[in-house]
Image (tube, rainbow, N blue to C red):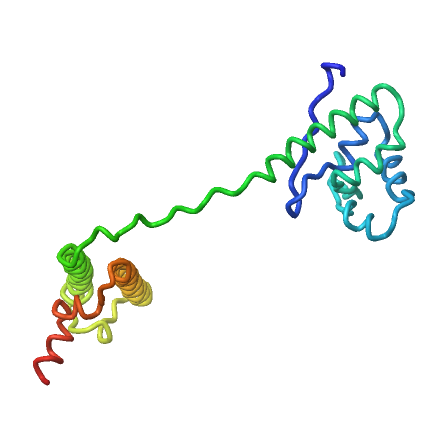
Length: 225
């Protein structure tokens, strides 16, 4: 095969390696309209045509839309059977090599997703400390955000509650920031609890029972009862 041949550039469409009618026309030394006509005149079934030749459009150098096709491996083989000559044979081989290489890559198994490390080595004491630390971090974050809101909104603004606060320039923006911050805190707290529950399940612990003593609202309920 001539060393001057460029390697065909294939793309993946719907999980299949494909080339284009434009590229085939360029490599086989044919006008694009001739290749389009050859595709439309192929003596194949409608089903084969639909599976292996997809009509698309491209923008030509003048900025105008033109018709083209994306073509699968089977479509290329069927179409290229009608191309003859030494140069055509070399390009057929180059395309088949390129299709083989890409299909080999597509056939490789996908990388396995990362999994959580085994936690069966955690004993009851370790699980208890993890739960305690996770809840303390969530509580500290909540207190930090609440303090910032009180300082920025209530104290600096000179008002006693967000509902009464009416600055002239940023009333709506600040209230939106409050809601966003509250949503972030809820999301972080839920994420920490879900992680704690997953870890607890691995070591057959009851997450809620383990952390109840660190939840102020639960303490108050227990004291009332």
